[in-house]
Length: 215
Image (tube, rainbow, N blue to C red; front, side):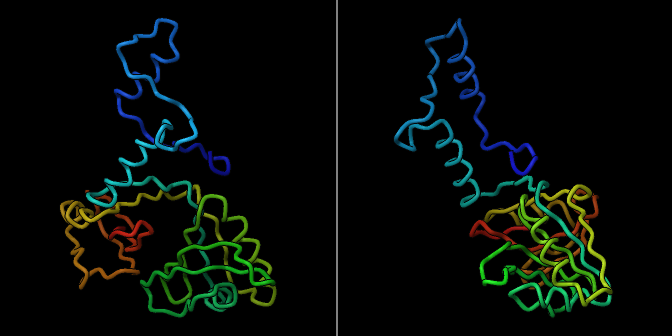
């Protein structure tokens, strides 16, 4: 569960699911391996092997994350750039199509939130933040906008989905689903392009937080 959204913590294999069901059944089949549950050693927990598989797949092959619960905001209007320049630690005055990772601070210099900002137009920005943060981000933006009235702030968290394709094999997978070149020279890191993936128009952001290439 994340801020009202239900999200899986990990995925078990069919064999592990069968063993888990059997362990809680009055007619337990003792020929099946029994999940050890939570223990003092992390390797003895139910989730350790499942998450290890996912980490290896992300590092060595490719994975898809459903990040649709992430907070998503649009900031636009004549004062949009000035508002974000005031509110963010990174420079927001970058070319249209850029993606910038930044933090947002409180009056004491503490970190309120971190997120990416995609500049879609001269005064049109798209923020993607973590699941519990959109209300914090909106609150700071509103407080900082008291003398910057020419802006619109929209929460589009429930209107848009987010899928992340990441891992060393992600370019090869994506290239089979789009006619757009995903080579570094054509689609460099920290940029956004509107492309078609499997015939579906999407905004593709070349950004990753897993230590491997991704969108």
